[in-house]
Image (cartoon, rainbow, N blue to C red; front, side, top):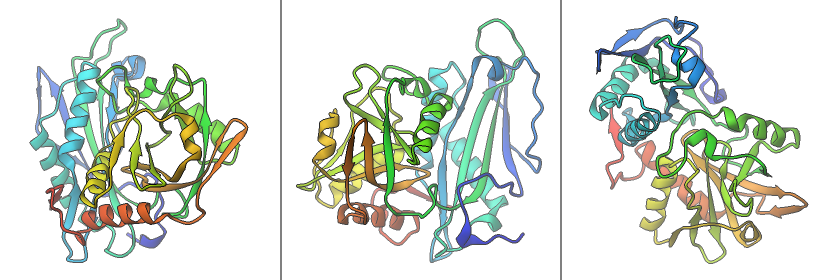
Amino acid sequence: MNIEWDKLGFEFMPTKSNIRFTYADGKWGEGRLCNSYEISINVAANCLHYGQAIFEGLKAFRGKDGKIRIFRPDENAKRLNSSAKRLCMPEFPVEKFIEAVKTLLQDNIEYVPPYGTGGSVYIRPVMFGTTPQIGVASSKEYELVIMAMPAGPYYKGGFKPVDAMSVTGFDRAAPHGTGTIKCAGNYAASLLPAKIAKENHCPVPLFLDPKTNEFVDEFGTSNFLAITKDGKYVTPASSSILPSITNKSLMQIAEDIGMTVERRPIHISELAEFAEVAACGTAVVITPIGRIFCGDQVFEYSKEVGANLQKLYDTITGIQYGEVADTHNWTVTL
């Protein structure tokens, strides 16, 4: 193994093992560590025809003290089960999920990036229906596979401002379900607008609400947050966005450091009034936005990271790496 830890990107890397569980006869079996990254399923498998597949994403970090901390795995387990419920899939016990992640990390401990490199371990659980069937119905059997791999920044350049472009005419609700129950995976509906944004030299697409195209929903890979000129933390209230665990954590951190938090509809006209804007999520953590292209308008923010975003970033990453007190007991130590 010869990994350049300080040059890690956000991409798939096979490691020693993944852990797999099979659901059959109404119950989940025990986990088994597998060294192969190949799967064999029937061409009529439910997941291939009717999209009965969901995924999650979480991270683990090696601290200065050498300990490995998993950030809020219970929340990811709960969100996985929310997605499963939405797609008529079996829920997976929260404690069993956490133990599976710990087992996987222990078996792949040499792939956890050293402290100080800025890297982490990205953990990707994916659940999918395997029953071969042609009629529209829920699968009777499922696989849950959890992978772990070293990862660096999602966007090249790390914690620096990037540009975003608003995309209209796309229903952002499609990847995440509808109503009050969100579904974490399938991001396929976001690929075309992401392609359009990149063709316009913007790595980040910004979705507006599908009904009126007048209110901010979220970025293509992550939630939207903004800091007002008077220091308030503002994030959209919408039924079609992913319930981000990172955003949930940042809202609590903002309150802890004395900021007012507002979760409410955000009209596009407000984009001109914000002091700082960022995307936030497991993969991107906090990615500052330098400019937003919205039709004929361009909303410009600082070319440098703003003071409020810097404070939020330093606090959440400090908790993840064990440098800031974890007063809310968010991390699970391996």
